[in-house]
Image (cartoon, rainbow over all chains, first blue to last red; front, side, top):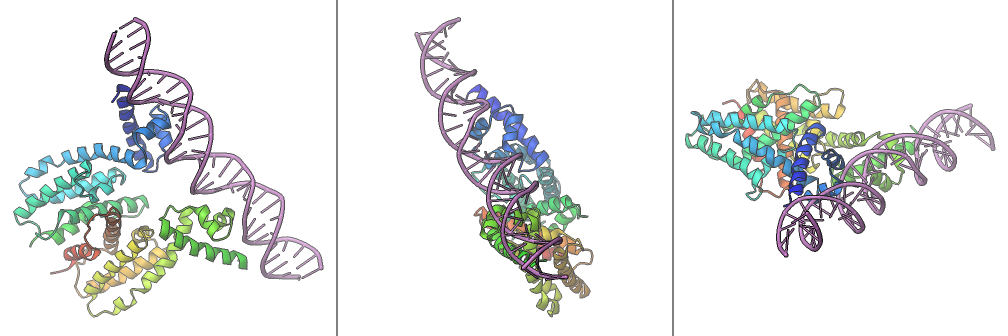
Length: 181
Length: 181
DNA sequence: TTGCTAAGCGGAGACAGTCTCCGTATTGTT
DNA sequence: AACAATACGGAGACTGTCTCCGCTTAGCAA
């Protein structure tokens, strides 16, 4: 890859992140190109469609989120650690304006980013199961579905200006159904 | 309202329902107008923007869903009735391609449609609480948030072709956290 | 250095969708 | 039958997506 190509690629991802965050996932691509100081042609060569650009943006995001889990993996109480992780996940996805909620639903090993999140979650789930903290019949995918759903719901009811229950509370309800007793 | 105006209004809602179902919430409005045999101007006078048309479509839908709850209100086991209702709600929202998921998040009395759904749910929740079937600290809004989240997650993971847990299962998990014991 | 070439750039423009304006047509009433 | 008031609908301005292709530039080899 030529140096100028790499430069433009980086710049585009950076600008796109900013713009998606500010204007939601429908931000104008031509506008992103302009802000990055390149023509639309350049943007579309690097990222054939909106999805691809969104993906690239999410990749960077997901890595930083997954890094967040490291301390939780060594926590004394794995069940509480799992609880914390799910709350953080909701917070992160919300902060990212739902751009990434699709990633939580993926179990695709080929899609690196999604896999990182799924895998990280799985480790925490397994640790909690190992100490008998949560039911053995609950799968990581199920928790991811519920978590992404909560992110969605929190994001959208907040957007509508409604008084909304906190992510902590909703994750808490889920965990109440999942914890052994 | 003039007779021709009413006719066009009805036709537009009917065609829009069909088109949104077929093409998702981004279906072309000019195309809907054309199919309804009217000009774009007519569509936009009746419905100043996409949101308004979507709303009108959802109104009809929500009424039919709420009607579905009638028998459940008299069920012998209110807790199971609530469980059933939530599952149906997810099914309905999914069948409606998520067009209406926003409605579940609203607690707005002024928005008739959303209110019908919220109110119906509330009755079922209250009945379940009355017999001590579910925790008193759980609110209808919280259940609606979780339910709409599940609809979202099921819809999107299905769309991505992933093996996905059933709505019954996920609602079941929620109910496990909410039931008294 | 210089010159070459593949890789990359970016703008013009085709296309599709949203929404508005306003002259024309239709309705329902007197 | 005539006349308001109401409603219609198409032309077109505007915005955004995405493609095509002539031009530019980086990187390499002599």
